[in-house]
Structures are given as C-alpha cells and as structure tokens.
Amino acid sequence: MNATIEKFGYPTTLLKQFDHWVVLLRPSQVTLGSLVLAAKSEVTAYSELAREAFAEQADVIAAIERSLASFVQYERINYLMLMMVDPNVHFHVIPRYSEERTWNGNGFPDVGWPGQPRMDSAAKLNEDQIRALVTHLAGVFR
Image (cartoon, rainbow, N blue to C red):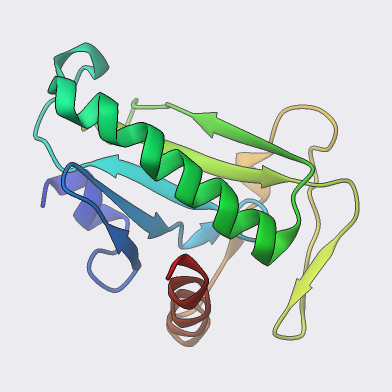
C-alpha cells in the first residue's frame, strides 16, 4: 500500500478492498461515516491511473453510497480530492446531513451544512472508537 493509504490508518481502518482501490474509515470524522477512497497505485495525478481503476471506481462509488445511505442516511455526499499533503490519488468522502447523527452515544453534527464541509471541525476518534466503527461499517459494506 502507498504512503497515503498508510497515513489514514491502513490496515486498521480498512473497510473494503477492491482490485485498484481501498475504502478506509477516516480517523477524523468530519461527519459520521466520513471515509477515504484511495487508489492503491503509487501515482500522484488522477489522470495517471490505469483505465481499469476508472472502470472499477464506478462499482466502488456504488458500494460506498449504498453502505453510507444505510448507515447514516445522508442527504448529500461530497467527494473531495484534496491531494495537498498526501500526494497519492485519494478522495475524502463526506456524507452530509442537516440534523446531527449519533452513533455509540456520541453526536456528530454537520457543522458546515448546508455549505462546504468544515474539515477543521472533525471529531478525532480514539483507537477503541475507530475499531468499533470499522467493525460496524465493514459489516454494512458486506
């Protein structure tokens, strides 16, 4: 796996692995269910991905949206390609909603709703919370 994938906690945060992509829990939850969709490739430009990765991405997006709709009942979903610090191709997947969601006794408001997601207000999960949320979401992805 490339350095970007490892920075987002792989393998601990792995929810689903595909041939060309991985879906990871984002350890800092901008909103409940925030994920990272990362290409396994070492490339640092989206246009450099293999054609097969683009074809597979349609299936990955469908799995993400189906799973997050079930889990968090999002109203909108944002895919942000912010490759400024972490150079390998990846997207931050931010489910959006107008009313706070709760999970495991914790509230997760969408502070930026209805505007841009507030990346700076993300809830930083501890190791136990990460493991619990990964276990739960991995089950939803199956």
